[in-house]
Length: 58
Picture 1 (cartoon, helix red, strand yellow):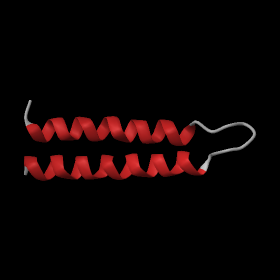
Picture 2: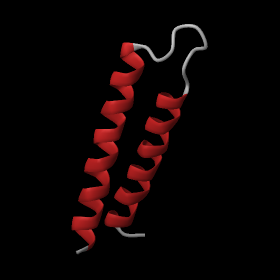
Picture 3: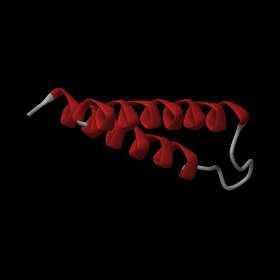
Picture 4: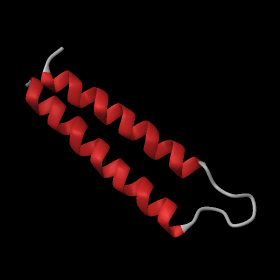
């Protein structure tokens, strides 16, 4: 497995984690500020990892 593929796999896991955190909202309060912030941070990390993996493979 090359480094580029490993970066794409890590990006996929981070994207799944971001989606999971964003979807886990409370019935009474909805999504909290820190929850949205952490989801956005994971989303940015996933995008950076995925783009780096694609660029490494090219």
